[in-house]
Length: 417
Image (tube, rainbow, N blue to C red; front, side, top):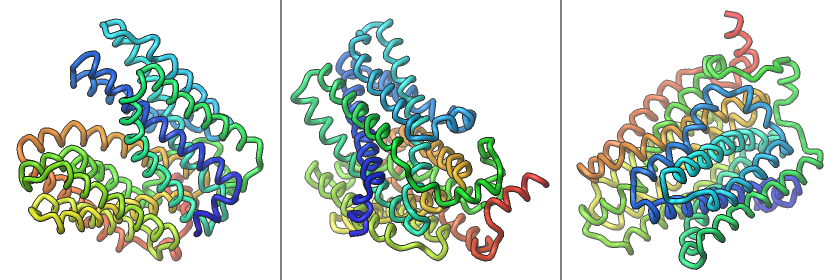
């Protein structure tokens, strides 16, 4: 019900539609690209090279490009980014041919799209809290988290169906249209006055026109640093579920595609349970809830490697589905309450570590799965559970934000030391 009330606000509805289409376009584009590359080259290593070319700019801009990122912290600028993505996606298949020169052109196009995505994602995440009052930041963060999760699933499903029905050129054109519509929605939103970010007043008092630096922010709020550090490991669990689950079911559980479908559906059910629960209730201590949820996620993932029965697997999958949005929404909602420059910097760091962690998971987990599917689940889940538990214990000894100085005051204190 809360989400429906939020969507009755025109700026929220417009940005929600833009974000949904952007993520949907990204997923369909990625599936179309990977399938086309493999069909043309027959090489899995080329697919890996494409994935690195797409994720690389997130790491580079996330760590080295805060000034450039800050230039795109408006709806108008993001509209131009999505318009550029539409042009690149539509023209890419016409420039690409399955030879050495064509591969270079393809990598260049993917690299450009990676740069544009790295500019778009953290800036949009930092703009979302400004759509609502401070007390509704948790709720609007949950809405966009659920949107992204549904769009990821719908993008994979629709991409697979479209690949069966349409030629490659038309599929890339459809992808470009999703980015174009998103660009139009963002452009329309830029002409409407929206509420300033929740802590905009604090930013004016802080008086820092320069982009906020990540390390002083982490020093000033170590709970954020601990949570982001744990989140950099969480993609190991995601990779275990994505890459290792089919092998685990086939080798260890002697199960087929039907059971795989049931377990993955259970994860989705858990997400639909956990997202509204965390979005409609502000936690008394966000760091403990965040790290606790990831500890549960890691423990449940590890236990999946030990279970040989369908019923425990399904319940563990539901548990991982509940834990994932509980942690991510809690962390992003807290970051969204900070002054806009600090919010953008921490959103960028969070987005960067997730991308780097995902790339590491894609590279490492197949090796573990080949050696032992059970071991892959135990290793991935165990690492996350131990790291999250350690961060949970450390967060419990850090002064509560309600009694400690504000983050802006702490950043200024760190900067003067």
